[in-house]
Length: 238
Ligand SMILES: C[S@@+](CC[C@H](N)C(=O)[O-])C[C@H]1O[C@@H](n2cnc3c(N)ncnc32)[C@H](O)[C@@H]1O
Image (cartoon, rainbow, N blue to C red; front, side, top):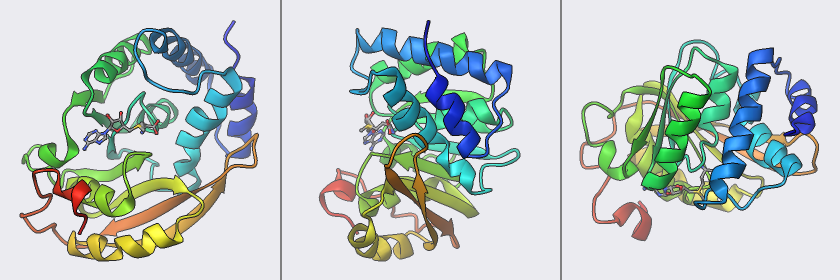
């Protein structure tokens, strides 16, 4: 039997109320994650307790802000095995969630999870962030862009900020030692039409691990020349 005791305790610490249906969904998600991970590489974390802390609870820490309440349209950029987008969707079914990843085998896994968990208003898309955000269907269409463990904040800002509507937010989930990275990204964030409005340190329940949530508000449209092509956001950040 798949164990999610650490998740159950940890959500109490985060002030999140898990319903019966949510619990069943997390159990099924964990089972599929472990099963698929034997065939395709999704995550190095395979222990029950570690999955609860480092994937599920970490993904839920953005609920310590009120940005994800209600009916928001969000995109998770470089979602991998669905983190943080899928746990966020399980907790708030009103979210309209787009999961984006550049690796198609991970998208196949995510589609299997979405159908097994019987979720709607959620789609997994195969593509590169810097290409997709140039398309009118995606550009400046989201209340929130969120991302964990994908790139340094300067590069990541060019991937994520173009997706966000003016007045919306980009939430970057980072480690606690973020000061230098943040300082080096301020120019990029400004050029892309946004500003840092908060930096929140969160402790992962059931551990001593501290992470940070960098909250970035979109204050004007992103100039049309961004994001740049040819791998420039990564090779030569703004
Ligand atoms: C280290 S994994 C992190 C996955 C997940 N966010 C997590 O925290 O567990 C980084 C993921 O980002 C994806 N990725 C990296 N650059 C990307 C890009 N430019 N566009 C879309 N996906 C990208 C990779 O394919 C990979 O699945």
